[in-house]
Length: 198
Image (cartoon, rainbow, N blue to C red; front, side, top):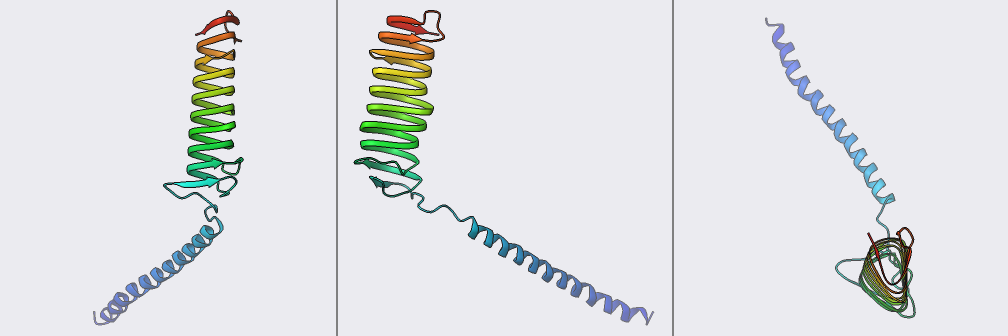
């Protein structure tokens, strides 16, 4: 019994000591991992020139930021900002995505999708959807949900209204009002004055 007592004391001190050593090793490993994560964060730092909230003012090609929230003055033009939310005013504005009001005299050009109002001589949403209104001499979109109002209105898939001199759509769920109205997949593809797709 006397021999077991010293062994018990040694074991009682040895277990916490081993646990502390293991914990310190674990902390060292965690520190190494954290250091690696810090390095990864430094490597994958956020992109530069990102817009700040709540507003940003862009004039011409400045700032060269991918995201602009607020007001953009496109005098004489503006093409550097990819995603614009707010008001776009001037002569020629181009972006990948747009949400808000675009009032450019010569051209409003959105490559992917647009939600809002485009007003100008030439309005286009080339590869995506228009949710809203286009008002101009020539309006075109890959698809539109809303109203196109102009001399020439062209759309792929349409839901809503086209009002103009010439209206053309591949598919239509709605109305065309104008001199020449064409719905490619309708039973009556060409109708003057009024054409209806459903």
